[in-house]
Amino acid sequence: MLGSRQRSTNKKNYVLEEEVQAPIGGLAVPLLILLVLISCIAVVQSSHKSRKLFGQLQDLRRDAMSIEEDWGRLLLEQSTWASPDRVQDMAVQKLKMQAPKAREVKMVGGYGKAG
Image 1 (cartoon, one colour):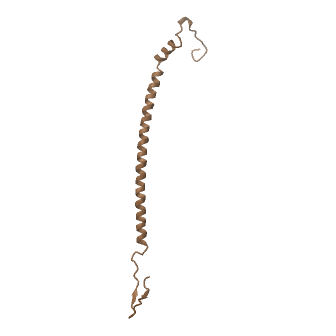
Image 2 (image 1 turned 180 degrees about the vertical axis):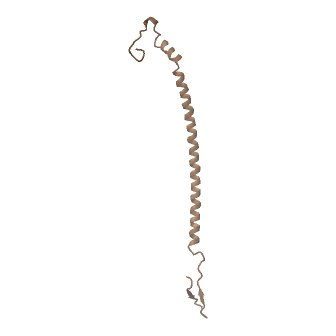
Image 3 (image 1 turned 180 degrees about the horizontal axis):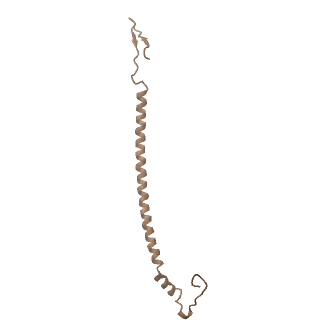
């Protein structure tokens, strides 16, 4: 403590000595070192987590692009299977359907604007 005096116990003479306290304080420096180490560990963990999440983001973007390519292929396949020419060929070949003759067509009135 500042200002306190202590006597040294020497056999021949008693000399008064003053206790000298650390200028910043005995506890402040170790506490600051501990805080710096904790901060360093937090930075390392944060950067590791950031890199890990960025890798996951890249994987998800790659998966999204693959899914979009599959979607485009499926739309093309759907348009191929549903083309009017294919539907007509299937109706004629498999279902034995044919277009009606002109005298077999009957017009129904009373519906919509025409009736």
